[in-house]
Length: 144
Image (cartoon, rainbow, N blue to C red; front, side, top):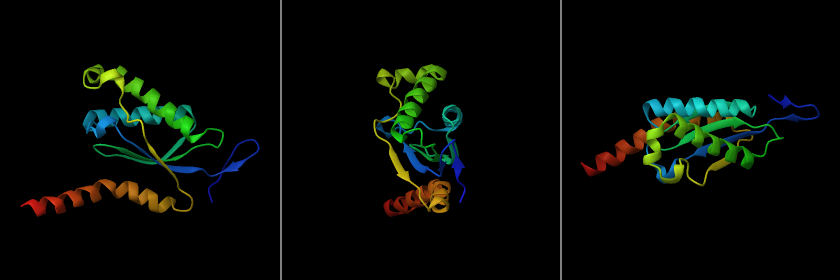
């Protein structure tokens, strides 16, 4: 088991996180996709959170992260969503006209503890885009 340690604790806290843009707008494409990835990595580094696996879909982001126990998950998510929104609007000023009140992320997010299923969740995150494309192709054939 790959446990990490602080001064008086050994820990292995891994979480599967899903972030969604407001109204599930498909804005996570191309250049913005890379920028959002850099921003999220920078913010995670500030809080000493390790990104184990991450993948940006057109309308949401999956992340498998290791969060230290001294940092509450809800506090980290508030920090991540708030600071990343400010940084995205700072770097891409044209987005503020599309998003009223400078709100980029939806109010809600999904968090699940990983437990012993790290390999399964890692595989799920890696194959998520392929699975979505296959489902889209199946539904597309129904309409032909």
